[in-house]
Image 1 (cartoon, rainbow, N blue to C red):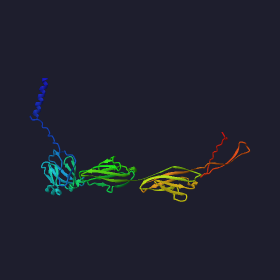
Image 2: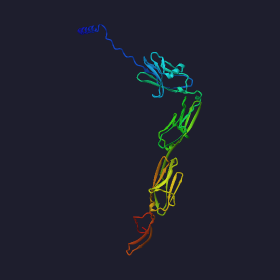
Image 3: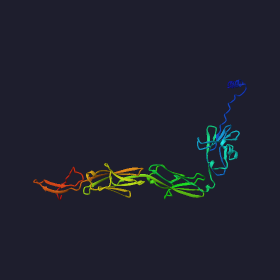
Image 4: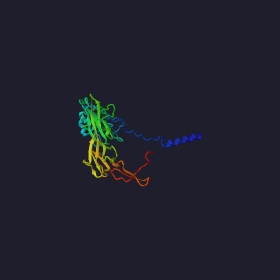
Length: 369
């Protein structure tokens, strides 16, 4: 144990001599870089007032903060630069007059805008020249006189829109100023069923049952307002009342019916494989409240087959098919005679039919059984 202690002491002595009696110097730690502490915000003020847009930065050191105005990279303008040590703002040429007049000033790295006007509305970005750190604020300025009354803007301005079925629809009612109103959407006649809260009502797919009137009810400022949007959905729909119709030989007439819906009101035509059917002595075409009829008189074998009820309104189209066939009439026995053979009879009958018959089936039995 004693030997180990002596050896350790000797080693320490040798190391101390090799370093000239000095401790080895440690490398200096790198100071932390700037850190942006402010989060993005929306700022509302009235014309003539002042607003302070914050941009708090820690450990700025010798680096600078840049204030820019504009919504995107292409339109942004550099307003001023604030150096981390001098903290003296350097305004760009187009903003020099605003600095000299006192409209623009700074408080540390914060930007102050005085005597606000509509020209000051926009997006302001504070950028730190370190690792691309930035924060963006939105400034809105409201005219004091108009602030008492919420002036709404509507989309579409006509408050009417027409779309094909399945298309998306957007309605909006908003105000460009402050305060923003509270907006509630509902269908006319169903005020207790709120569809959406906020300035925009979006229907991803509009169907025929969505057609109608939508109310945008707003409250804000000194009064409540509201307006109504009308939605028209273009569509057509057709279905046959009967897809197969059998004509009785005794009648030799048939009535084909299809039910039609659509907006705008569709045009209806009847077709066969030979082309469109026109009104005439053999064909009568009529309509009443969404029902369209084709009546065929004195049916012959050539009249049997498929008929199409075709509808269109310039936007959509549809068709329904009806198949017309015939069944023979009741057989009528003309004569039944017994032949020379006691169990043999000659029977004569007649049947009326639109089409030639290929098969007869006779059933017989003893009378009274």
